Image (cartoon, rainbow, N blue to C red):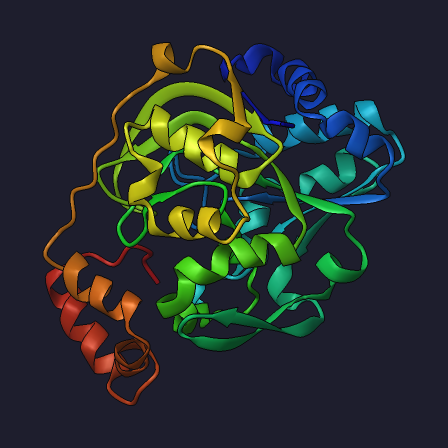
Length: 326
């Protein structure tokens, strides 16, 4: 039985590019890069400025770019994300503020893209809740040979954890992608497959505990994890965070539908138990109505897409702080 490889390490920021290069060889990424023409890197940029434990560091992505170019100097590397959900912020401005556009001038063959500004193609996804037509950026279908997810270890108010799978939600260019939340657990592993996400690297300098994806308690863990399977990666990092992956609905469904391997098909190398740290979810009062909307198509439309939306949000933010200030 051929196993998927997951490598667990203590993060070494002083030699990060070398570390990533070593990991690439161990998970088979080096062979894939040598034969590729173009790859896509997806950092987690869910906030308009760099925020420890919330956004992937530009330094981490730069080190990955260096490692990939060391393997294949002619490789074309795309780095990007989609606009902030619910029109919360402009991604081009965010990537500029965090220094991502500097990568274009420092490294030949690197292009930073706002996925919401690119041509789109509609894809029909099949779920138990009905067929869901969603527009995806054409570059994944026409230009990219494969994609790499670069998340952080984060608690998430709605999905419990946000790792390599959840990180891909930002690849959907529609700023109102929240309208598809009701089918999220069934969609996300299909999206990963369609967009060719084959590898994952964890920027584990800082994680986010207690709440998320934008408001929580940042904690330093100094983890580096890589894998040749998003499912194997998320199952392993869940364990490092003190969570049973079977309690994460979208991971259950990914495994059930054959997008994620069984635990017996995963080979984990490294000091996982030594680095393990328990993360906990603490939902606030406002989390529960948001969770109801997350799971209900009708309630989502009422709260976010109806004539009552502005009034409802104005009332809510009278009592709580906005996660992203206008």
